[in-house]
Image (cartoon, rainbow, N blue to C red; front, top):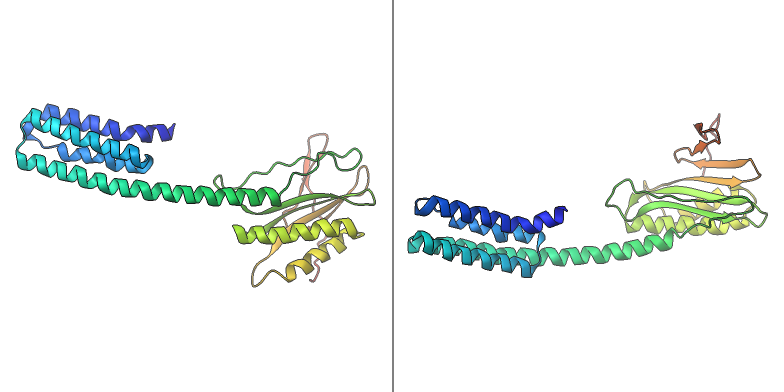
Length: 260
């Protein structure tokens, strides 16, 4: 809806200027204001539409100038302003469209990388265990970042899960998230317990992270029909939703810091 209004705005502005100049007569020179049409067109229109708006503005200027009997000097000034703004608007529209195409290409590559990184989790993981994922970015425009999650079935019959976040955003964060997920997919399948899985993740990150960079994550393992082991590595505590509708954070009574 907003895009359609922006497309109609140049024509609406020129119509208002034309009506105002027609009613004001030769005593008030509103013709240079017709340059607002191509100026507004460069914001939302392509090059062709911007040029069309400029041609219409010139035609209106000539028609109103002849109707009101404007002096040649005033008419030339108005035409010069309209043509100058139209040429500038054409350049601005072309630059904007080129930037939008480049941004669309970057977003397309980023979304493809994100889909490869955060591949769909299995709907069923182990007997009687359903899995569902809902991912919503904190910023509406954000398409790529360092959020990560994965579900792996252990050979012993258990199911292991990771939910984490990499400091920062962009392709660098995605690269770090890929390292975490790659290490988790291997370690969750091989290691006997979550602490060993976490150690494998720390070793993988120690070769990658520098300075103040860090990754937070929650590791979980379904160890029975009604028991889940959780290992929190600096991440916000997971929320437990019980069958009766009550909720609580899965936080330990005492924290147990580990050294890398």
